[in-house]
Length: 453
Image (cartoon, rainbow, N blue to C red; front, side):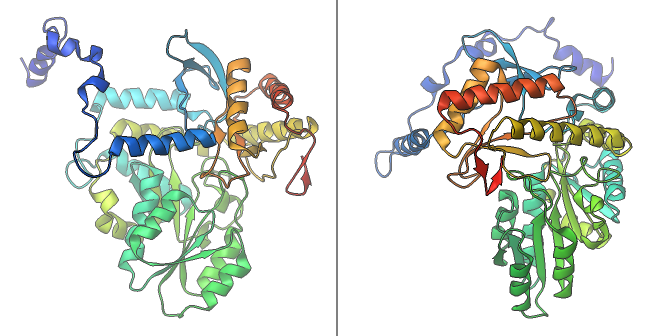
């Protein structure tokens, strides 16, 4: 008998039943086994945590998670689970699986085949036994997608941003990082942890960026970090102009394309491809967890830049690499998306149809140039109420977006239509939103940011 056969036999539940003490673990009440965090001296930790959580609840900002069961072949429908209630189907209107690729047959079949042939995990960090042929193939595909010499895969987009910006900012002598005021939390964390000088320019404000850059020593290393699509407002950066300003002052450009890869450009390389600015961007950061429907993040850049982050980036070096099946599935998704322009055409058609229906229904649609469709509520508690009413009364799931994700007073429902939302789905959503607005006494037919909804 082979070693693998012996291992399989030793773990077979039919011949080796689970010991009674293990079988009963699920019945243990964890709250009774954990001692209270109340030391004999000093702070009462549990009381502090509870008081902070209560403050969130009082403001209507406490985060409730909807427990969903995704159903292959039924997207954008999912099954909602609640304690003491039978599961029920809901329509999801806030997924970041923007193209529904998380359930595409080409992706699922590739992932299943890879699990069957290589197992579940990678077996280590990339440096110690964890570099798989699937990782290498994926990185080559990502470099090709963005027209760069090399790419590097991380466990998440957050880790990719934090690690890369932290590593560059710490290593470049006296580095200055110029950050858009609305950059993602992962970029902000990387910049802060780098110890580099931080300079924040007003959102998408070229004149302010130019002013800050011009005031700096030309010999000082600089990085201009910004996003292509800003995920809460749905607006787009002037990529080419920002890159030109940065390069005039000797700065590297770092572009976060996580909400654009797969959905814009002839091959789905993002807004930089769509706007003809791919060659202008020095470092592109993207995700595999949104339009590509899997999980993970990456950067694409020159071979030297990528090798530098691979060799010095702690968040890369000390993290176990993603499972080979995930990398293989991501590769299959990228190849499918990049070759199927009709996916992006259909996606934009759904976006425009939803915006059109919201506009004519008098709902407070916030200005957006992309697939992000924000509907303004303007109050944290009522935003949560609107979300609850949609879920309980109409089986529509859309998560409320409150502070600190967006500024106070701009709380909203953030809708993300996909190619798989039908005309009927859109009509039903708009009708339900009108009913909810009336129930809560919210305004219909108002203007948002000076523009008619």
